[in-house]
Image (cartoon, rainbow, N blue to C red; front, top):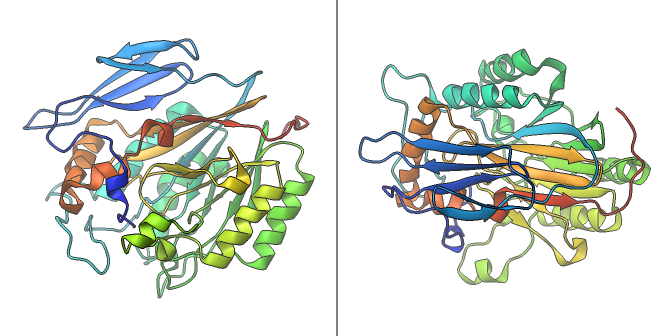
Length: 370
């Protein structure tokens, strides 16, 4: 995980604050969390049944529901990433001595299993048409780790589940293997899933075959395309370079990144690229791809304990961030606020616009049922 640019993110309040945090804004719902503090459990307030694009005040926080894309709602896609089945120590950042590191308490279930179980319950209540797991399903691809992931997620969602590897799943000695490219359809949307993992490396890569496949898929698409993989693209950030904190090793390599951005620029069927890996909620937009969002979603396994709901409409999509809210999951994720000397929440949570936002269409697509 990369934490170099944490100071650029200003939300949420610091650990120990009892100020409410605006977690989720959808077209019909607002969710606020109060952090657990000084022995008081975390609290959740939900306001549902709201009108789209309407001002609302929840827990003293003024916000506005998202505008609803035109047309009928067609489908729901849920995404998860960075589940890390088999991990036992949370907060280790390779090559550093930042702290603290945390583990489950004696008698508690392993935190990756706890967080995944609670996430799967919430995803199940959303009744999605497709569930996409974008890598780092395991800690290191050890025996039993992938099986534990599949037991939890495939056992619940069966053929609705699609997954690819992340760098942890391709660790040295791992036997985890999966499709390099995977095309899945729901009504109103095609999901193009790419395995970006490179065995033994933290960074990711796309092959020429994968790029050609995505290019051809986007050229023939009869509906919008949402591309996904574990690694986000690397695009040089002069301010990061100036502070000695380049992101190169934390995303796709330079060549893959440039090729992917150029491909999306010339294929307007692709409405977004979504990834995990960085354990944070962030959206970037590049000059060559205009309003198209390049999405990163925080991890399931630690703070804030995230998954994402994508609502598909005739005229566009909504990306709706969810914080896993079962009480035992909130207790663990609130403990994780202490990570990276207490800076982790500023890094991982992201601004509201990094979590909940519309994804517009880049062209009118012919609607086709799956």
